[in-house]
Image (cartoon, rainbow over all chains, first blue to last red):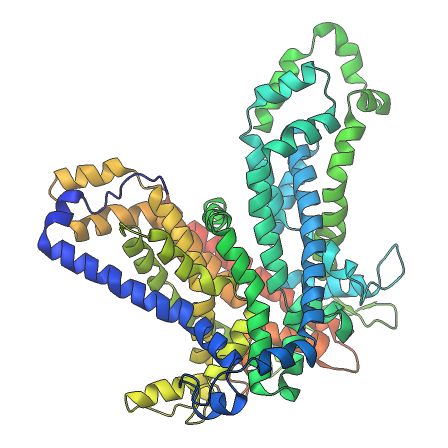
Length: 294
Length: 320
């Protein structure tokens, strides 16, 4: 990171032995705590996933008292069909990502660049939804999915029931709009003078410039969908269509602990890998979220 | 911003065309690209209309109706509200939710702040600290809760009880005791969420004006005084916001009580959201959607009033 040097503790302060050892020690302690608290549970899960169930139950903190084996992971994949549910999770996440990107990009573009007369009103209505707790939507949204007003065909057990409501994230639209607000207006004017209509402007100019914000919105869209539990539980009642997060509590009672822990490890792997690859987008986006809320 | 664009539009409009400006017909709208603008606005309008604005309005209507999915809804006035208020479980649910929110503040509010201030002064491998702190946030919450449920195994060979056994403590009952259950839930929830708050504080800390530190140093302030007189006052805006957001978030806690304890033991972890869920979806014979929406509306109105009072009360404090 190319940040300015920290200034709360000045280089002069660092030269004092008390600060040097006190703060250095505090940093070391913090690192140890973070490893134990942040990484520890995951390491335990990884260990338990390749330890026979009996060992995990009788000696949970022992390291492979009777050796390690991949049989739990195999059973999770073959008997519990974790792969199938993982695929469902990916399908749900992909569709939710797509609706969120489409709504945020087109909506942000219309609100920030095209600015029709009614844009202010719509923006205020969007901001208002940020203040409505999600729980208010739950029951009417469920009834709307069971009995859609115009379509008259229940969306229960179709992925549309998850994909479409996911698009209604005002936070994404606000992020996109603010990003577009900061793009230099001269580019748009120049493109308009060259004869670019709103569609050309969107495809050829705005979208190529939007890669950073698309990255941030994508990361949060996929993560939110991966984490979601209650809504897919309500609208996807067919076990064959449920994502892994919804299946896990349901299979817990009929699955041996070791196999169950292996299934949970598999459920964690993709988000953790995604986080390690795109950590900059995650961390910047989270900081950005704080800035917007603030 | 929009005001500025309006101004430029008015200035740019030549006088000769005033005759046309007074008569805005659909044709002029079309010619000015109104239709293509509308096409771009359409996904937002459809999705938010159908899945955000409409359900919000429906909540306000359904709270005064008796709704089941078989018959047409009938108006029942305030009946749903009085049924919810007189439900003997409601006071328990409200009390438990407030207890959860309070414990979450005690456990989860000071720690991320202290960690972030400490982390912002790390000189090497600061990224490692951030990644470790954020790692629990990316674990799917269902996995986090079910994993911690394994840790909380109340037998002598549970994970936490084994660890405490090393120093001669326990075994503790964790989720099986009425007094231990709620703190256990809060502990997991804090673990799962604190990382995001740390990252928000770290971002806010980089925005603190370095000149303030310099000025304080010149005045001879030590590190503690700089934390107290520069860092914390500079962060108060974001601190106030994370506080209210955390309260709003914990007031809607659902996953932990649902998966850890289903509200037990003896309703010790029954929260408002769990009660809403029980009203609407807990009964296999058909949900009482009126009571569910009435309770969710009451919660939403309470949170709105609370936020309003909070923002009003802290207004003078947050703006210098």
